[in-house]
Length: 326
Ligand code: SAM
Image (cartoon, rainbow, N blue to C red):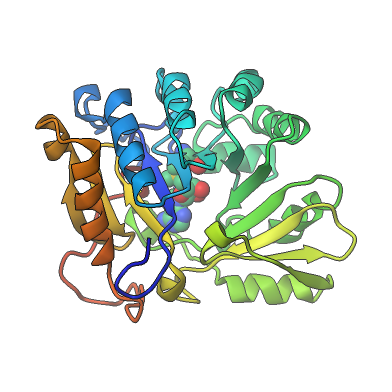
């Protein structure tokens, strides 16, 4: 569907939990355990209803995220339910790879098309430090197996922080030489714990890579929205850039979010939207839910608006990334 600014909104990021098995330093405080009660999370039936409503208004791609979506025991059931919904063409997940290795085949069979795995270091010790406990070798094995399992697409999400992992940029690029993956550099946003680290602009990362390699621009897919993709000549995989800060992309925004407690979030940076869970509790029909969602999306923040950390505005988002879903 088109919003008031004529942007094609075709991509839903659906968070199914705010809980996570890791405590990445830029995302969650070390001792955080203030997660939503299970009873406050959308149930698999409610998720199914919401996705049906979104499909009625023309959403074709769903990304399941969190928190860590795979900590939900009913993830397989959620996946199967979404897969059966007419109009949903692609189902993707953003995960830290938790318990994924042993389930890759089953998830593929049950409709999962695309996988994004967050990996901020290729160094075992540093990865363990950044994530406060993650097992690099297992995740790396998972990534290789995901590529072999022939998912439609396997991508890595990499957040570069100055003085932490900015010495690994070329290592990440080199990973795309023989492995058919996309490495996506995502600019660190000054949200929650992210404020404690120094971000590196993607324009800086791109120039650095270009000083070592010839890059060819790759075509974007319609649901890629604001990301831009390149390839090192002769390499199998690709590299991508998501630059919310240095290259405000509100004019190309194609997405909408639903948080794990059922809040339809219209813009990453603001807590504006509608509480779908209240309507679900009153047993709203799929069609009426679709109308509500359509009206809200139509009024999404205008494309002239630019995300800017120095903006002083009302309704600015204060929740951490685990609550928002990335
Ligand atoms: N647990 C899953 C994972 O690790 O991919 C999904 C949720 S996580 C919040 C989604 C994405 O948000 C991850 O790729 C993570 O790197 C990114 N993220 C978290 N905090 C961020 C921040 N302040 N700025 C930019 N990206 C952030």
